[in-house]
Image (cartoon, rainbow, N blue to C red; front, top):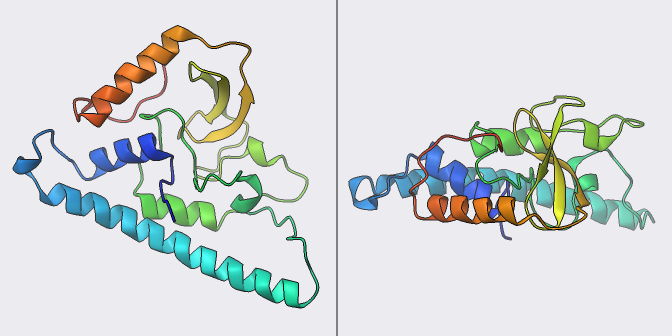
Length: 186
């Protein structure tokens, strides 16, 4: 199973910050071990949740329930991406350790009748979003506090300026030149 709880870019940025991975890896090779351990611990939580869900569904199917009930869990908001808390902006993501965030999302539920997209499963804030155009074809509603995407819609047209800025920023992150902490889109 691929596992990038915030999406690849935001998860990579988070791990670089939390494990304090330096640009010159020879200065601190154990930083990679710290990053892998954090990711592994969070993945173990997700795998345990997957096993529980599979066992529950198997029992439901044995009782004749072919459709999974809408339980208000995080699964009802996923589109098959495998992201637990998708953060489309690479530097705007939760700052807590991945296992803490993953466990919180996995145990969260939205009460029946409440719009799932209005409540952030990571920080619990309600109706607290900002709009962010990623430059290509999508307009995201991000949680103002932690950067998790609470909704996405198709944008009218691509905007080349944010797209170019995102490309430059990602190249800096990927080459470990971006040592800035997590930040809101601006």
